[in-house]
Amino acid sequence: MKRLDLVIGPNGAGKSTFIALTLAPRRSDAVFVNADVIAKQRWPGHEARYSYDAAQIADRTRRELLAAGRSFIAETVASHPSKLDLAVQARKLGYTVVLHVVMVPVELSVARVTRRVRAGGHDVPEDKIRHRHDRVWPIARQAIEVSNHAYVYDNSRASGPQVVAVFTDGDPVGVVAWPQWTPAVLVDRWPRE
Image 1: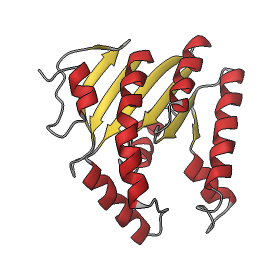
Image 2 (image 1 turned 120 degrees about the horizontal axis):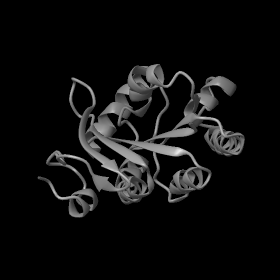
Image 3 (image 1 turned 120 degrees about the vertical axis):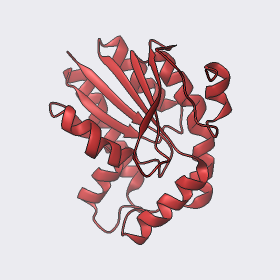
């Protein structure tokens, strides 16, 4: 079965950690495509300067994997509507699309990126974090609706990601337990129970 695991969420949400600790061990058959990893591997110490080039390589790699019918994991902030096209295209090509939306409040995103930079990780300016944080949720809503399966995680706790909503073909499965800080665009579409 061809499968795309698409992991989206704002900067500092914990997407890479979620993939490394939770998803990748279960999906050992899948290639992992991430622009930040590409930049770090190809241009160590100069990741920020080559972030656009890395994003282009990641985009090309995803297209090649789709064309080859290979399963893969893709990680993105998804602050631009073009990221939704990946899920739509994969479904058209017969992939099972499993979406993982990793949520945190914006202040936690800012704090985590600051911590990441202090630890030697890549930086994202605070104004960009806040702008992207606002833009990701309408795209996440659409991605939930076009994916075969979607899991939404509250990753604001020290205990790690907790599933707060599960969807199949855009319809909730079971209780939707949004945290109080969940963006309105999600709560309005799928009210808390």
